[in-house]
Length: 162
Image (cartoon, rainbow, N blue to C red; front, side, top):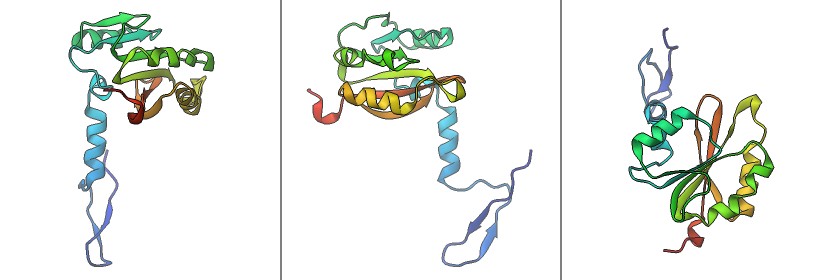
């Protein structure tokens, strides 16, 4: 499939230059980086990280995690956990966020995994409101799979203790 012509402007003049199928600009390189980074890199899972999974039923994700770290807990997280992945399809499932906040290291994160698109039962704004009431802030959204999205919640920098 042929790309449509891209119209750009020459610097210093109003002359429009036709660039055909050539790719120019930071937008193209940013898009390429976005789609080529592995999921675990996007989620910040480092080798040896302490990870907890609560109700996330995705065998392929569990396989990916096992290839990156051996410290994976199903259910209640251990103290000083780096990353917690929690599934939530209702506002009630967001209630444990305050308790989970106490289980992560100061620079750790809680990833809330939920359905996306028309199948979504909660909105991003619901997750953000629950995060604020638990003393957390959202700072990243990642496409977890074709059917799920995830929002990263962290302790605000001002509230972190070294």
